[in-house]
Length: 639
Image (cartoon, rainbow, N blue to C red; front, side):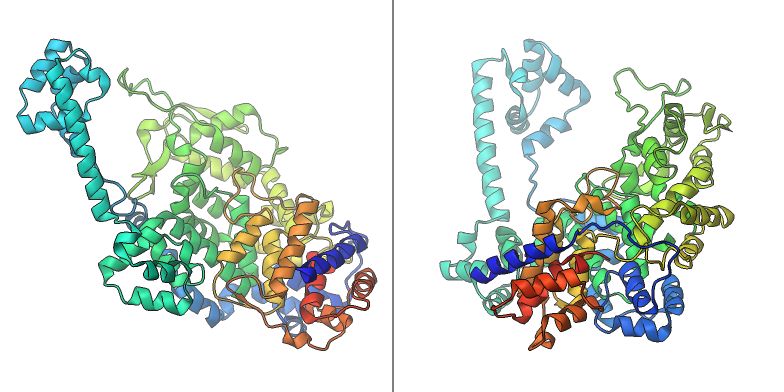
């Protein structure tokens, strides 16, 4: 505890030694020195350099290395990554299989009362009389049923159905309800027996708090049925040290959360181990741009396909194709409620008793404000309404079973629409939405908005307007070819300039992953890392608002966030992050400058080095302490 407090106090000196969020002090027309260029491209195009990466880039040449990253199909993938992803079954399943295997509640958790089934089996006339009829009509309807069915119907009867009925029927209903509750309790106990009926006290201890070996031996001794029952009774919590058993427990207790857990594991493993680093950075960028919140109902199940099928294939392709793929994907349709958006139809009136959803503007607004034009892109509220009308009928076929895109003509607004001055003639159905996608993809504001957002991610929080203009011109000239836009940016003077050097603050995801990569750590379980990232303010797939997480550094500079980063660095360097194996023996008997240079791939700034040396004066400068201090420094926190 003393060492932790000491490390934190010294790390605080580092915070004071330099600002985490730095404005560009160099000029954007001043080229970086050759020594800095390899470090810079690794900090911007990857999730942080691994040991030896800087030398690899220098040997290949910065330009050639960037070109390779722009063509990931030419890069052999890391076999370590492929092995780690092999166990994540949900990543490879089509949507309908995810829904079929993981969408329903676990067996045994829902038991339908026989009384409710009996009530629902009555004819519409019988149900209407029981719910709305007079006392005499209700009594006669019940009398017409055979005794067994009457008993079940009475058990399901709400109070208003029993009101005014004779005392004997009231008592029969009460006895029937009590008997059914007792039977249901027996059935629940049979399907989900409590742990103390399944295991001895010693077995319960081993299952909950035993060693890894004890837990494995115990569960391997069970037959399949008992193994599942015990898993269901325990839940995943006791298996923090056994990812395989935790996954097994989640399948029988929290199947939908397992789908999301595997998606997060996929993201972190790819960020840490992939050789195709730029592709992973871009997948993260575009997932954030087209943000979908994993906490909204079915989206926890839909997000795997959304990232795999609507984002990843298009990160080097044409923007219009990605925009259309996201517009049609059930994850986006559900998140922004467009699947329910319908327009009144005079030619297809609904019965008066049927309540029909109306026009929903959520997707139309976010499509223009966040996905294409930007908030100052030149659209009006009338454009929002017209776009929302154009996408009526874009819905989801069978939300619970298949979750596929479907255009439903019955919900579509067939009237003429005007979007940003473009007339969409009446009566063209799904083509209205396709035309809107085309209009927005080719709008000058979209070219500028997308170009600036990319420049903010890769160059500076406030990128030079001249660079944004050149990128926008490429976007327009190439019909939104994102690979070409990236090439324009990476080839620019501004990208490899002193003005861009070390001006970006790492997001929580970037900071955590870059620290793991810098230490060349072996990650056997990503759960603790995901939780650390969430604790720092960026839960993976967990941004509620459609804005996504900030693309600039000012959101991550509050004191709590900075202290959290120091806490993480301390835990990681000390080997205290579960599932992450760190070996810092290469820093044994090294002085602060050598340790800092090894982690930063360059000499530390004078301010950082002075703060470290002052803090460890007359103290034991252990490798873990020095590693903590360097990773807590502004030199490491910026990229």
